[in-house]
Amino acid sequence: MINLRRFTKFTLAGLTALSLLGGCSLTPQVSLQPVSVQNASDAKAWELKGKLLIRTNGDKVSANLFWLNTPDNTELRLTSMLGTTVLLLTQNRDGATLEVDGKRYSDLSPQRLLDGLSGFTLPIDALPYWITGQPMAGDQVEYDSLNRPKTIISADGLWTISIAGWQTQSGASVPRTLDLKHASAAIKLQTNEWQALASAQGSKGAQ
Image (cartoon, rainbow, N blue to C red; front, side, top):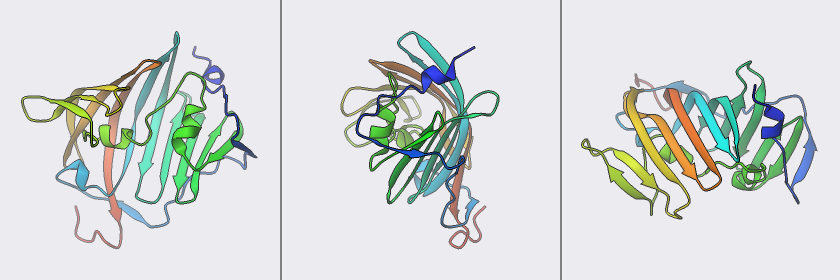
């Protein structure tokens, strides 16, 4: 059985540690409802449910993944197979907060917070694009026979992303499985459900 506490060891020098105030979760400031889109890039907001497998320095950890992504707020939650929250990252216009191991850490940059995890990181700024099959500016891309990204190499050359399959969710074609490789980690991300969202006020008539 994976020791999840080892997965959450920190070397967060210089970050602000706050008391955990009882497992709070991000609440979007506007009401969102499911919509259909032709392309994933048309979704201004979305939520994703799936699984994450992380291999780093001989360790292997698997977790359930929930990700809510909106223009103003983000919530990324990893839970154990028993449903226990292992990691919660939230972000709004004021900065980012990471809750892990019964403690809360804050920083203006969510990437710095994740990089503070010993031996583990996620490309948090680029992943919302890759997870929906969209390369970022400067990425090198190899396309499949249907002109969909098959392999992406990040602009800085640190990450190689292989898309193993595609599926239709919320009317759009999105990757089913991503394999991300980095010098310090290998990550497999499986999308079980991807739902495009829009403001309830601005999406009347959307289906």
